[in-house]
Image 1 (cartoon, one colour):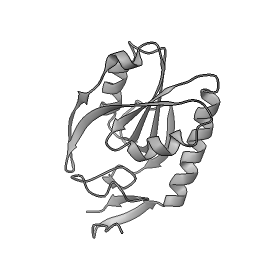
Image 2 (spheres, helix red, strand yellow):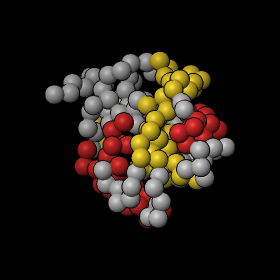
Image 3 (cartoon, helix red, strand yellow):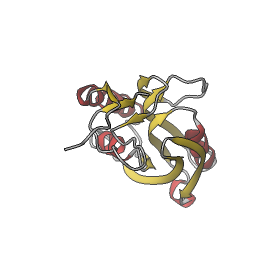
Image 4 (cartoon, rainbow, N blue to C red):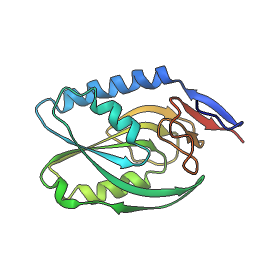
Length: 171
């Protein structure tokens, strides 16, 4: 049983998220039909969506990860890659999977690290926030208001990642 904080409000149900992941997997499958990509899970938040996408793929998929830290509780900071092996990605098709795109700092850093190494780079995010950030991901599942989100891999101080739905935290 997952306990919600008292100020949590349902944004996307588990069913909405499952349909969205189905749609993303179909689009990725079409894009990658003749390739054997490496899925790069941006740790820790993207573990659930990476697994959900991988098990729906009809192509041979390898799995890797990059650990990127940005948040301390509800406060964002400068992202830092703390675990990354460049040799693992040289000359490959890479699909970066992340949970949420808000200001774009994490995705920008990951792209900066991978683009010089890979043959092809695609980015997938489950949720894109409605922010002033002008960059984007190649595939976006859902669009959310610019509020703090928890659930489906997104956390607050390490809690609530396991929620099957996505919630906003209201003031």
